[in-house]
Image (cartoon, rainbow, N blue to C red; front, side):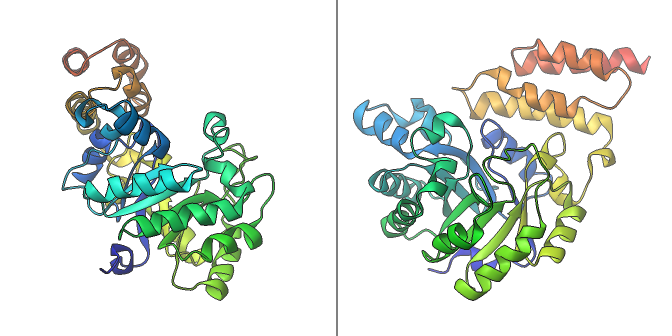
Length: 327
């Protein structure tokens, strides 16, 4: 079976996986306004999936971890992102993901969250290249889906020669490089100059592996510029999606009329209630901040929306504000 990765036109632009952001509701909002080349789920613990399904015997419809793996047909191709420091757990999750009709599997080897790292996962994987290779091979053997990796350029310092080479030796379909170290977090600018070095390493080690750059991509024009300059195959957009689900259609945040933005926020809230029932409505606050900014009365409306606890209440507050300001 040919991987969807090999059919993507270059350069391509993809959605970043972000916890409590790229859930089914937000992905559908983006899909309807200009889809990325590839969708990503939020990351999910492979160990957690095994525990809740096999140990606790939690039914899938009530299982918040399995709920992360909810998707629709308008989100294609879609990659499920998983993490674990145990090859057998990664294999279990890979089989589960394959059975749920996903198009690919992505392994998180870059998350700097301390709770994730304490499990030996996420960014901690950069300290153990041999285990990282075992994890990738376990996923590859467990299903026929293409396996990709999302990581960083190093842990405390840039270590592409060692780390990227180790990943390339496993022949993943694609590698996304967040162009910062674990130590950098997001406190310094992403170093897109290092993407050139990554491309050189890829070209001499395993030319078939696709390389995707990630970090500080502002919009689609910026993505094109960064890809052309670095020689990467594509770029991943993350924060650029906040308040701008039209970003993959080429719009910047200032291109969309306010009424259209507020309608999109209401739609997001309604779908959030329908598609992510285990999640708390307060998760939408980060979207409220992003959508409701930069216009007269934004602070007042934003404050009201922050206090809402349902899609109906949010919609009513938007309508009230619109009627008040249109007089």
